[in-house]
Image 1 (cartoon, rainbow, N blue to C red):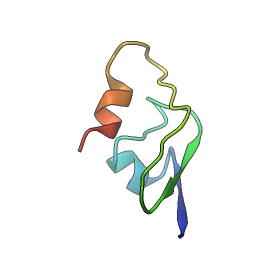
Image 2 (image 1 turned 180 degrees about the vertical axis):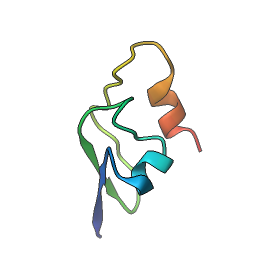
Image 3 (image 1 turned 60 degrees about the horizontal axis):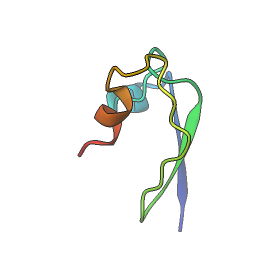
Image 4 (image 1 turned 180 degrees about the horizontal axis):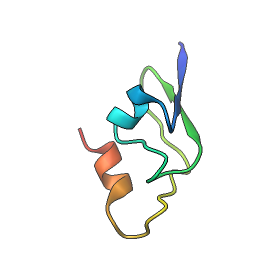
Length: 55
């Protein structure tokens, strides 16, 4: 199994919705299943995290 680091401030990950103006830090994504931990939005109750994990 391989893991991919997802970072804010990169064109690829900003396009995914994980931009530095919405979220601090980085994530690690594994192939299957996808597990996301400790996603903290800079704007509370704005739906940023929900938008990030929607298909």
